[in-house]
Length: 157
Image 1 (tube, rainbow, N blue to C red):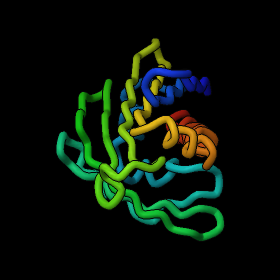
Image 2 (image 1 turned 90 degrees about the vertical axis):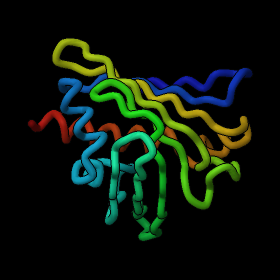
Image 3 (image 1 turned 135 degrees about the vertical axis):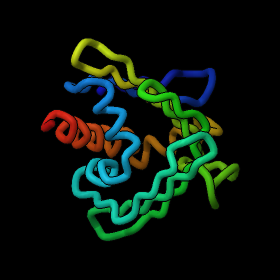
Image 4 (image 1 turned 90 degrees about the horizontal axis):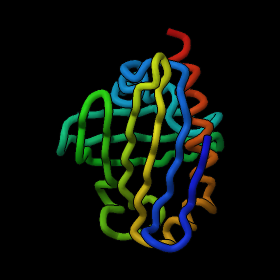
């Protein structure tokens, strides 16, 4: 996983990798709740709840359980859905508009590369401090481990 934390400018974080699977399979794994429950989060994480209405304005309600048993309810709203190429969502619910490392907008772009897929995630934070807090909490590590689980899921097909 390539991680870019640009200095100065907008408070963004860019993560890129390739999946050994066609773009349509990676798209399905990003947008099908039954599949998202299998890969979302780092090693040892579980996802007892995942409900997704994948359309602009649709909601994504998710509960992520960390290895220590703590549960973290998450809620997002989809802003853009362009299968199988682009998916954009932002924080919804209690954290919306209040700042903090969990209040962000995420854009995933999938590019076909033969039988492989290039994945690019851009996370837009409300401030540089929020981005730094997310990095300090292990955001990129957890996301990278989740992407490793996603790779295992799509490669088995």
